Amino acid sequence: MKFYKTLGVKTVRDLERAGAAHKIEDVPGMGHKSEQKIMRGIAFLKQSEGRPIIHDVLTYAQRLVDRLQKVNGVTHVDIAGSLRRRKETIGDIDLIATTTKPKELIRTFKSLPEVSQVLEAGETKIAVHYTLGLNGDLLILHPEEYGAALLHFTGSREHNIKLRELAIKKKMKLSEHGLYKGKIRVTSRTEEAVYKTLGLQWIPPELRVGGDEIEFARQKKIPELIPYGSLCGDLQIQTNWTDGSASIEEMARAAKAYSLSYIGITDHTKALAMTGGLDEKALRRQGKEIDRLNKKLRGFRILKSTECDVLKNGSLDLHDDALKTLDLVCVSIHSHFTLPKREMTERIIRALKHPLINIFFHPTGRVVGRREPYQVEMDRVIRAAKEYNVALEVNGSERLDLHEQYIRQCLEVGTKLVVDSDAHDPSHFVNLDHGIAQARKGWATKSDILNTRPLKTFLTALKK
Ligand code: DGT
Ligand code: CA
Ligand code: CA
Ligand code: ZN
Image (cartoon, rainbow, N blue to C red):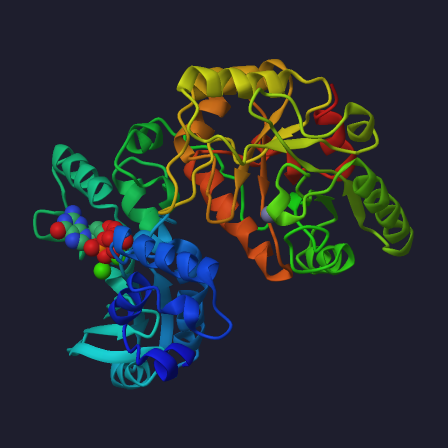
C-alpha cells in the first residue's frame, strides 16, 4: 500500500522499475538495505520461474483439503502431484476427490476464498488460479478408480512410466483408470492393491522419483521410513539473544506444544556480527538463564548449545573453555562460501575433527532457489563425520540441506543424522515436518535420525 501510494506501484514489474531507479530507498521507512533486499527477492522470484518452495504451499493446500472434506457428500480429498511427493518446489496444486454430490463440491470449490479465478469448469475437473499465485486442479473421481487415479496424479511422471512398463511386462495395462488384463479391470480401488498386483511393495510418495525405488519394491526392500511427527527434540533454535524473534522460554513453550521434549538453543556466535552473535561472556549468561528455565519447565529440557561459526581456516569462533560448558556443540559455515573445493573440504574436516563438536549444521550451505551449495567434496565430509562421530543435520527450513542424495549416502556410510527446524520464530516448528520429508526422500528410517530418541539415549549416541 505504501509503495502504491508513494510510487504508484501496482505490479512486481513496477516495483522492480522503481528499485532500479533507486526510488524505493527514498520511501519513508525504507532504506538502501531494504531496497536491495526487495530487489534480491524479485531476482529470486524470476529465477525460480514462479515455482514456490514447498514451505509456502503445503499448509495452504492442507487448509483447502480441510475445507473440502467438510462438504456434504465428500468421501475423499487428497493432495496429489509434486506436493504429495514433497518436492522442494511446487508447480501447481493437484487435488483429487470422490463425492456422492459432485455439483455441491464444485460449487463450494469455486467459491473458496483462496480461489481467485476459475479457469475451466467441467463436471469432473475444475482448474483454478489461487490467491497464492499458483494454479491448481480438482479432479472428481469414481470411488472404484480412486487408487489408480491417486497413483497416476501423484507421479512422478518417470515413476509412472516405469510402472506402466512393468505392467506391460506382466501382460497388463496401467492407466489412471486402473490396472487391466485385456478389457477386464483387475484392480483400481487403492494404491496398495495396484502395487501389489504388480508384484510390488507400496512405495511412499516421497520415493517416487523413477529411480531404483521400483526394483527395491520388487525385492520387498523399501524400508519403513521415518514417520511424520516422530521427533523428540530439535537441535537448532535461535532466540532473541541473536536473530530470533522470541525468548528462550517462548521457544521452549512452542516446542513443547509441538510435542517435543527437548531443544537445543543455538544462537549465532560473534563472527556473525550482523545477528549480534554471542561471545563467550554472553554465552555464559545465556547458560544461567537456561538453568533458571530448566528448573521451571516440567517434563522438558533446554540444552545449552551454540551454532558456532567455523572460521575461514576451520578453527572455531569460540574458545574451548566456553564450548566445554555446553551440553552440545554445533557448528556451521556462514562465510567464505567461495573457497576452492579442496580448501573448503579441509576447512570443514578440520572443524569436524575438533574433539568437542557434536553436530554440523546445514552441511552444504544451499538455500532452495536462492543459493547454490558451496564447492565441497561431500563424500569426504560424510566419511569424516562418521570417523569423528559428528552428526550431520537435515535442516527443515528453506535450506533443505542435506539434499536427499547425501542423506542416502550417509545411510550407506553409517554417518549419524539429525533433523532440525532452524526455527527463528515459534511458528517455525512446522519446518520439522519438512525436515522429515527430506529425510524420507533420502530413505531414512526412524533409527537413522538420532533425535527421534529420548534425551538420554540421544546424548549417549553423540558421546565422543
Ligand atoms: P509440478 O506440478 O511441476 O510441481 O509437478 P507434478 O509432478 O505435480 O506434475 P503435474 O502437475 O504436471 O502432473 C501431476 C502428475 O500427473 C504427474 O506427477 C504425473 C501425472 N501426469 C501428468 N501428465 C502426465 C503424462 O503426460 N504422462 C504420465 N505418465 N503422467 C502424467
Ligand atoms: Ca503439480
Ligand atoms: Ca497439475
Ligand atoms: Zn539465524
